[in-house]
Length: 321
Image (cartoon, rainbow, N blue to C red; front, side):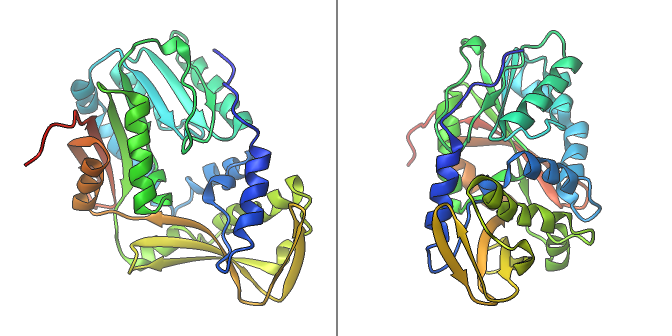
C-alpha cells in the first residue's frame, strides 16, 4: 500500500479562512476544517448515535443493493472515494464489484493513513492508494490506477454541506476528474420533518456539540488561539426556506480572543456559522445530476424514505432541443 500523496500545507488555508471568516458581518468557518484528527474521530462517533440515521440507513441500502450496483457498473473499475473517513461503508461496495484499485481521498492525512491500512488488510490483493487532499480543490490522482475506468463513491450526503451552486461545481469537477466512461455512486439525505433532522444534528449525548466546538479547540491548538471554549454553545436548526440544517457556534456571553494573528470580539448571542447540510427530494437530486454533467441511472431508498443512494453515469453531453 502506498503512502498518501501529499498536498499543499493546509495550515495556511485554515489560518486564511479563520481570518477572513471571522471578519465578516456574518461570521463563518468553512465546514471542511472540522476534519482534523480529533474532528474525524468525533464524526465517526456521531455516525453511531441513535439520532443520526444517515449512516446506518445508507449502509442498509448499500448492503441490499450492492449486487444491482455491481451489475450496472461492471467489474475492473478503480473506486475513487471522496471524503473517505474511516471507509466503513467501502467494503460492502468493494466486495460486490471486483475493483481494479481503491483510492480513498480525505483531508485528514493521519486518519486517512490509519483507515487505508485497515482496509488494505481486509483486501490483501487490492491496490489501496490513499490521497491526502481537500477533494473540493483539484488534486493529483495516483498514476498507478492507469487507464482503469473509474467509479466515484461519495457516500454520507457530504454534498449537502455545499450550497447548491457549489455542489454543482463540485459534481462537475468530479466528472472531469473521473473521466468520460465514469460512474458516480452518491448518497443524498432526503428532506423530512424538523424534529428528526434537528435531533440528528443535536444529539442527547452532546457528541455533535463536541464536534462543532472542536473547531475552536483546533484554532487554539494550531493558530495560537485564545478562545474560551466555554463562551460558546452548539446550535443546530432546520431552515425550511432554504432546505437545510444549519450548525452554529453561539456566544453565550460577550467574548474576545486572538486567532491567526488577529483579535476578534463577539457580543452575547452572535454566532459563527459552521455548517450547512442540504436535504434533497428525488426530483431535485435528478436535476442536480443533469445540471452537473451526470445522467441519473438508478436510485434506491430505505423503506421509510429517509435516505437515498443514487447511481449516475457520466453524461456525454449530447445536443438537447
